[in-house]
Image (cartoon, rainbow, N blue to C red; front, side, top):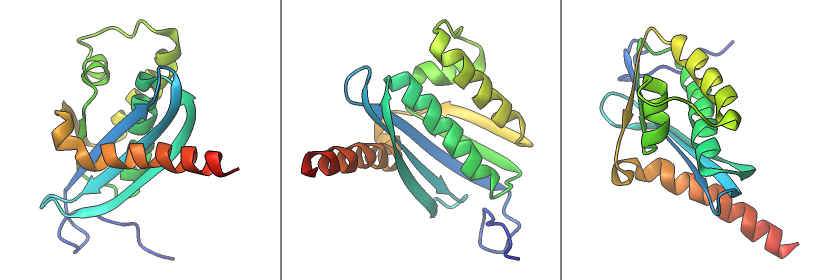
Length: 153
C-alpha cells in the first residue's frame, strides 16, 4: 500500500496546501476546460492537471474546476487548504456575499460547499488572473488539445 501524498516539506507533516483553480469557456456556453495547480507552503508545485469539460458556461467551468481541485487536494489530507481562484463571482457566492441565482449553478455550489466543509481549515480567495497563470494556462491547454484533436478527425 502506498502512502497518500502530503503537503509541506516532503516529510509528510506539512500543514498547508495551496490550490489554484481555473475554469475557462470559449463562448458562453462553449468548449470548456479546467486547470488545477497544487503547491506546498514554499510555492513548490506538487501537482498540476487539466481536463476538457465539453460545452459549459464560464461559471460552470469555474465551479467544476473548484470541485475537481478540492477532490484532488483531499488526497493530500492537508490541515490547512488555501484556495485561489480568479472568479470573483464564485468566491463571493461561496462566502455568502452573493446569492446563487442561476439554477444550473446551485447544484455545483452545493457540491463545492460540501467538499470545502471536509477540510479542517480552508480559505477561498479571489486573485487576479496574473496570480493564477498556471491554472489558467492548463485550462486553456485542455480546450486547445480538444479543439486540435477534433480538427484532425
